[in-house]
Image (tube, rainbow, N blue to C red; front, side, top):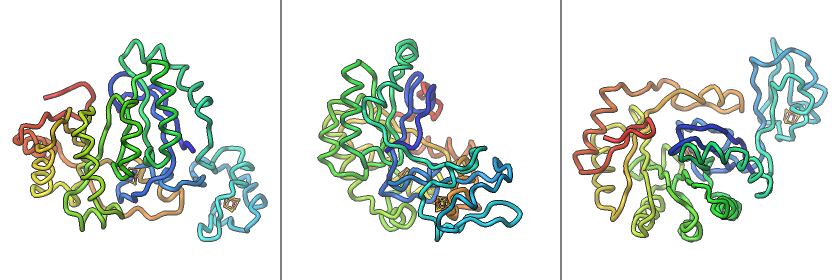
Length: 301
Ligand code: SF4
Ligand code: SF4
């Protein structure tokens, strides 16, 4: 199941890419900017700013989960994500996110942009959610890409069975691998899972010689302290091979999505890191002789 396909993506690896977002993720990161991609089933999204007050959703809902109070309101406890209100919503304020595609259907969408990949050195990036969550579909899609000579990237949290990584290894040109927190107690608090499997998989993946860029989300007050950055860099510096380390500064894109799916955003009062804070963290990482990649694609320092 896929919840989005973004064509002409330029921040998900080299060149012009198609980013394919697979639904379902075992993590629940507090800062996740794709919360609609976390669940493995279709997810109702309601964007109040698109509502034109036709009120067709109220009659369409078989569970009586929608009422009108200065606008359309959803009782998320009662809603079972059936999508009937979305089908009745002409302006598209209500949308059921998540559709099942076959590999052949996905490839038809991907192949439309092959000329852009060829000209720009781009390709396809499988993201999510956690793409390894649908490992069989991912493997078949990667295989279909490689059959057509398309460059492939898998953007992963690393939280998946090692056997899954082994099975896709020959089909992946580059892994974008997230490293969020080295302290396991904090990792559990902020992502809902332990980091042990993630660190183990990264060690194993690196020992295969796979191309890996490790991406660290830089989140003020969560993981931007000197201790975590040093601990992360120290761990990474001991890996047998690594193409680079990229900081992904926290941003607020996606915060509004939480209200639209009836969830609370738990980093409400957070802020973006300053340029000085980003550079200070990059300097710590570079001090461990690791290649730091500026988060603008293509610029390495
Ligand atoms: S998705 Fe939820 S709110 Fe919409 S019709 Fe179904 S139960 Fe009602
Ligand atoms: S791993 Fe990524 S998709 Fe999953 S919850 Fe964390 S930020 Fe969201």
